[in-house]
Image 1 (cartoon, helix red, strand yellow):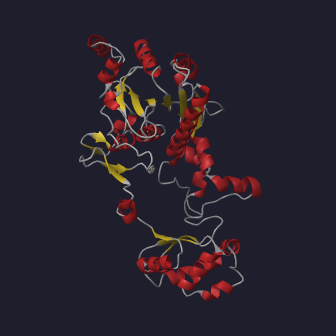
Image 2: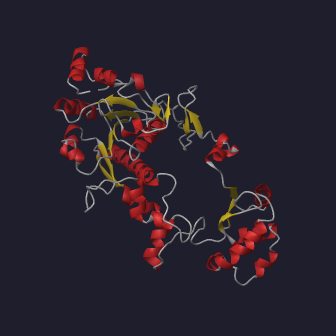
Image 3: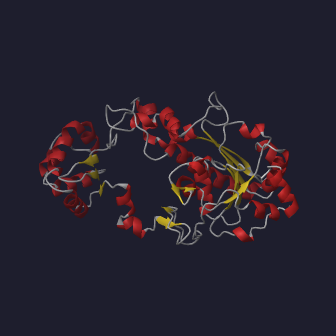
Length: 400
């Protein structure tokens, strides 16, 4: 059993041990979150190379900011899983763990002799999560996949961007992050199930599947109403006005979801006559007649600056917002108040987006920095019972 005194974690997942065989983003984001919730995460990396993202610019003090951002709250152990001794060590680690997360192509772990069936024999309580581009079965199971591929194949890019423009990738890597979040949810569900059955289980998460799930009403509208979704810019496909508008200086976003909000917005803008206009009595009618409504609103929004409109709309209790840049968003008073930027470790100057979960009755532990490559190899092997001489031999034989 590993001695975790040097990596004791607090939080709701304290006591859960995760072996992390993930790389890039679909996977590391999931294990970062599990670690942030209090799990102990042991990241297995290739000797001498490590996670592919360790060499992606930009860098901070010779460390990849990309890698640092999603590999917090982990320890790093290098291990050559193509060597039999490496597999033997790996299985000893798995025997002590609750969860394994990997994001290789389907079949890769089976070819190593480290698939779910192999490791279930080592640890029947193991929750084994596989994240891949297309899942463990189907005609595309062996294909490589990255974020833009998942977004493109799912139809996400076809509904993103301006009408008539080129298809656009969503600015954040939701293909990767979506699968990481669904994997984390599946892991937590499997751990809960294990409390009653005593057995672990296998979780199969595909990036393409997750993108389809995230498209919610676009999928439902096509399947049940026969409507093919298309790119609408900042507009909502069912609600109007629900979009960005230019003002005399900077643009704003406005959302009018109910007739009560429509009434208040029209009065705030001096457009009371639109309340009796037969084209705009309901949300559905406003959406159907959007091409006639938008110019009327744009003309008025252009008469004042952003801040004036935001003050007026807030006073009328109409949802509206500035369209922030990333620096603007990070300096927003609400974001600052919610402490959504965290310095890891404290005093280092390295800052990242914080965990967006607040649990007053089960506070999360302070985040720990991403590890150097192989930083904890000797300590973890020693905890497994290997002697310094054995660890030295592993290094000479390029096992670790």
